Image (cartoon, rainbow, N blue to C red):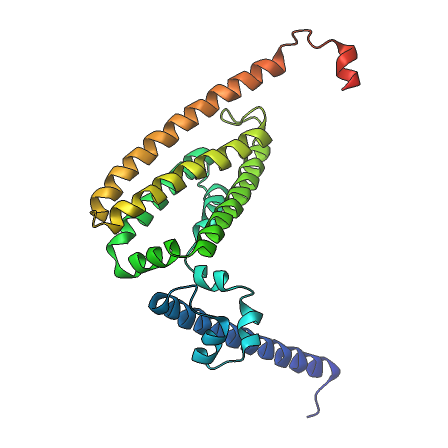
Length: 254
C-alpha cells in the first residue's frame, strides 16, 4: 500500500528527529572525551604547559574540533567541576514551598562550603587545586566564574522576592537587597573556602576543617541574614515616613 502524504511527512519527521538525536549524542560524546583527555593532561603536565594542539593530538581530533566545543583552555579545565555557578541560583528557584529564599540559599552555601573543603581528602581534588593555584589564568577565570554565579544568584533572589511582595521576609527594596546578598554572601563563602586551601595543602585534616568551616559559615551567614533584616526595616521606615527633606523642588530637579 503506498504511503499517504501524511505518512510520508511523518516518516520524514521521524528520520530527521533520529538524525538530530544521533548528532546530539555524538557531540556529547566528543565533548566528554575532550574534557577527559584535557583534564588528565592538565593534571599530568600543568595547565600552562599543555596546548590546545597537544589536546587535539592526544584526543585524535582536529584542533578546530576542540575549539568548536571549548573556545578556551580555561573552559576545558573547569568543565563539569563548578556546579555552583548555577547551583546557588537554582537553590533559590527550586526551594521547597513555603521556604524563604534566604533559608534555601543559606543551606546551599553551607553545604557547598562543607563539601568543597571535605573534598580535599581525595587525590583528584588536591591535584585540581594544585593545578588551579599554579596558573594565574585559571585563578582569574575562577574569579570570573564566581562573578557569573553572583549575577545569576542576584537575578534569582530578585525574581523570588518580586513574586512574593507581601511575604514577611521580602525586603522593601528587593533589587538592592538581592545585589547585596549575592555579592556579600558569595564573597564570604569563597573567602572561607580559599582560606582553607593552604592549610589543607600542608597536610591539614579535611574532615576536621570541613566540620569547623561548616559551623563558621552557618554562623556568619546567620549574622548577615540578621543584618539584612535591619536593612529591610530601615528601608521600610524610609518608605513610610516623609521627613520633608529634600524639598519637593529639589526632588523634581534631581
